[in-house]
Image 1: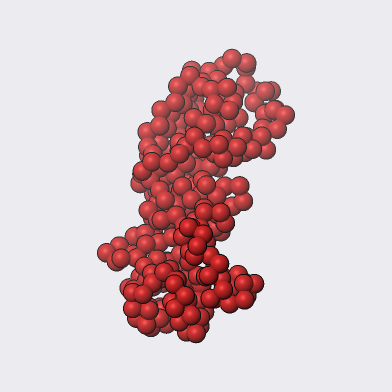
Image 2: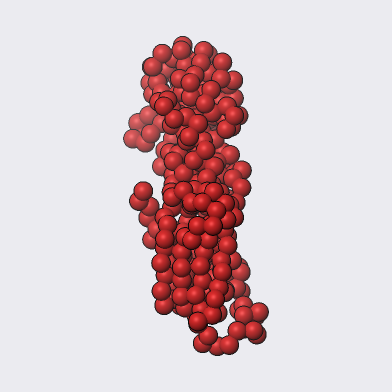
Length: 279
């Protein structure tokens, strides 16, 4: 799986994370570690997980002047077991110590997203349904969290408000109706999806040229009824109330897509640790 680990937003996230942690300097390391002392460090997975974010390590160390050697022994999207060595680094002990928490924070958070995403993806195996992430991400970390979600096996929805049209109920209200919202959006050249909440809105959307529908807050049984009625006239995304316990039922109801904000907003960070040894 190929990701753009050199995207400027990633460098910005790393620099901000290091800045908030180190501030004017790592005073503990400055007081206790002799200048110029060198060390090795090893990163270990401490639970079963889908790893994500390990490719940030070179960026993190680069921001602090670099290290003498760094070996990544796993990649984002890899399934790791408890006790697995995933990376080794060699350099100034001070650099390794001041980067330790930032490195772990990124990998623990992103591996949590990837691991939860993999569980959602697993639930819809052997169906036509794809699981989508959402914009319910940590402010400033969206690109990273969406990369982690993809590493776990789900499909990225739009990155933001700029790359696709998603007409929701408030847009419909502001535009004056379903027909008006679609008429204004379809010529944009962007992908267009519209939320429909009633059969009247559904019929109006289909007659107005909608090709992708968002069905929100339906039970699996209701979703099946709606999808049967749509009968392939548009693709269907289910959102609202999609959990690990329900995602399979929505997929089997015939949904083309299901989206779940839980993948990013409710992921539990995974356990990794770092062990340092002096040279």
